[in-house]
Image (cartoon, rainbow, N blue to C red; front, side, top):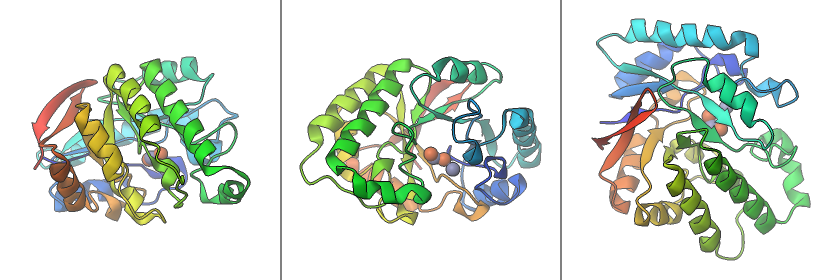
Length: 265
Ligand code: ZN
Ligand code: FE
Ligand code: FE
Ligand code: ZN
């Protein structure tokens, strides 16, 4: 089976299309479970232009419920959320997650301090930074996120490569210590095909990172990070081939935040 657990709606203000169109595309692409995981509300100071407003949270729940009715008997719909990890917002995030019966919650790092490093509007800042230092800070945040135990799935774990910035030296030690924290947290990795759409031209995570994860028995899910309907399930044959090649024959599905392995289709 294939799941697509990373899917946005236009409530986040940078995705387009209507929820039923996302569902239709999932059916066309043979997805077994489509999970919506739109960008969660956050405290007002944090990146309001890239997420649903707090007052739209119930609208989001209603849209996913509507998707469930629309999809009935054709594709299973899961209620997810893409959460943000920013030190200091843990209590707020915990409160939002407690407000609905989520099947799973993705945790992502999109900011280093006040720099939204994966937003093309902020790309100039990369020129002022040392790439190796950015990677160290980024993976430090991923490990800290894992230790919060707030989330089920690490979103696009190496999104720091999005615009093609690569450190000159090996970062295996950094990746291994990060993956140890992920493993201890019980989280899975989001095998996210959206990296293929960006200058890094590579699935998140890289083959190297996936090999290290496989060696530690870190589980995986699948997501296209759809921001419009035709993204749903995009490049999943490539993702499945990558997973198989790295030695994965199972992925996880989630029901009420409980993971369950299913054979990778
Ligand atoms: Zn987004
Ligand atoms: Fe993200
Ligand atoms: Fe996303
Ligand atoms: Zn994402």
